[in-house]
Length: 285
Image (cartoon, rainbow, N blue to C red; front, side, top):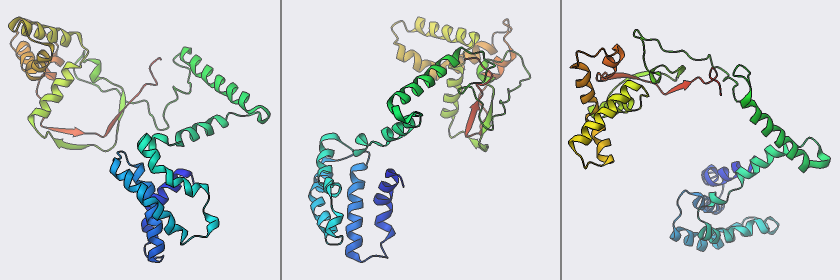
């Protein structure tokens, strides 16, 4: 097992795995040392908890000495005495873990093709990888590289089709649905309004941007000393209603049909999908 697996086994499984198999004194000693290593590994650490661990570790080690022979105890078992003090100085234990560096060293050692000169071989392999990765961005878009390799089950995605022309790009992303879809109801009208407002304000279409700037200008003319934060709040609250009134009651303007549809309120019952995988393989870097 890896060192991390041993930690999980000792901290999580050991206190329960041998509860019915070992004598009570043996099980309590093993469970106590497992709990000792689990507490400093939490996300948040309290000073009083660390001080209690510092008081308990001599007793826990003495209980282990009653069970295991003297040859079992070496410097590694003694290091547990210093862990609470280190936690007081550093904080939670995960800030001092070496797992990520061990994985990085394993990755670098895999580049050592010349065992006679390990360091130079690692450097040469790393430089070759970085150079090839950097130059791959200058290849033609049709050239398949490591970064442009399609996913294993990627079919390229499907572009949505609409009955009207000129639909903005935000509604025409090429991709595929991920996961099982289900029909859900909006939990409240506020959520539907927030989602509708978010889509319109993030729609990078010149026509929507024009109406947004016009709305901001009217608000600033009505309230000359209004702050930017209050303008954003008014956009969140009133922009959709204002935009709908501008489009519906302006008979002289010939607005596109998609604009008349996108300003309508969302359906109360919608399809919810866990993920939408965008396709980047057809685009040039």
